[in-house]
Length: 170
Image 1 (cartoon, rainbow, N blue to C red):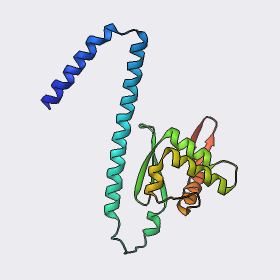
Image 2 (cartoon, rainbow, N blue to C red; image 1 turned 180 degrees about the vertical axis):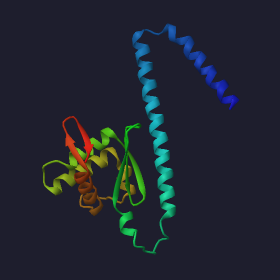
Image 3 (tube, rainbow, N blue to C red; image 1 turned 60 degrees about the horizontal axis):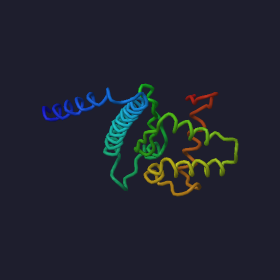
Image 4 (cartoon, rainbow, N blue to C red; image 1 turned 135 degrees about the vertical axis):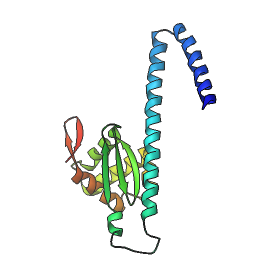
């Protein structure tokens, strides 16, 4: 720990020495980068928590091949909103994925579009493919015709209402 503190103190001193030499644009850039880095650190922390939660949930699941009365519930979607962290934990089959509020709003808007069910699933699949391919891979969604994707769309449609400028849970 003392070594880490010494390294941090050295970096802080180097940064402090450079600050007076920077113009306003340079300072604004550093400030923005610091905010982005802090945000990324928080997302990493939340992802680690979500992975740990999913691991604990997976350990609770029965061994492969053994069916229980709760199996169907494990394949359903659930969601938890973390207001303080500004994110959503979307869970399917014991696997929790972290979505930012922006990501969730984008996905809900696609799910709530007034198009045919097939077109809505196509757009949601394309969005997930572009933005969150990890979700497709880990939840076994290989095309827009996937029953899991259809269930996800129905879940989002019944769980969220679009209000002007934001999304909100019902």
